[in-house]
Every structure is written in structure tokens, then in C-alpha cells.
Length: 150
Image (cartoon, rainbow, N blue to C red; front, top):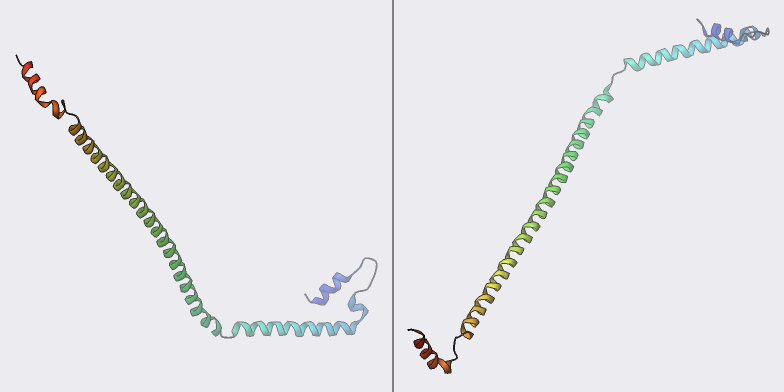
């Protein structure tokens, strides 16, 4: 079906108006010629577009492959960096905890040693001070010990 026929049918009015072709027949032939030329040019262009060689597509593919590889490499580096940073922080935290435990054990050992030294000193003082009898009364104390035996 030609455009003229479609256009003429669409322009029919129920109130008795004439179609565009009936109003000006010279414009109708010009319109048909213009549409025919346009249709032929569209067909020629599309045929030329489909039949030409596609060299530009082949040049883009290696660039895209390198971009893809670079993207994957960068992603892997970022993941490895994040994982290693997390492991490093975990290791540092464990080292601080271990150092705190060792310091606490050393502090407790030093405190226990100081207590033992204090107890030894107090025991020595107690043994030195706690005599049954003063030195001046020692001969009398010996006499009393002899008296207690029957």
C-alpha cells in the first residue's frame, strides 16, 4: 500500500471534505517522488551499512580485554590488601594481649617475691626478738629448766 493511499484514507472527513490528492494533484506527484527517493536512499544506506567491513570492532576488543584484566587485577589487589590489613590488625591485637598477660604475670611474680621476702624478714625478726628469757636472765632460766625435770 502506498503512503498516498494511507494518507488519503486518513484525511477523509465525514462532513464531505476532499482529500489532499484531490485538492492539489501537482503536490501529490511531488510527494510520491520525494517519498520514493527517501525510501531508495534508506535502502541504499542500510545495504551499505550491512555490507561494509567491520575493522573498528576488532581494534576495540584487545583494549577491552586489557581493561577487563586490569580491573580484575586491581580488584584482587584491593581484596588482598584488605585481607592482609585485617590479619595484621588481628595479629597486633593478639600481640598486645600477650604482652599485657606477660606483664601481669611478671607483676604478680614480683609481688609474690616481695611478699616472700617480707615474710622471711618478719620471721627472722620474730626469731631474733622472741626469746624466752632476756640475755641477762639466761643463767636463771637454765636453773628453772633443771628444776622442772623430776
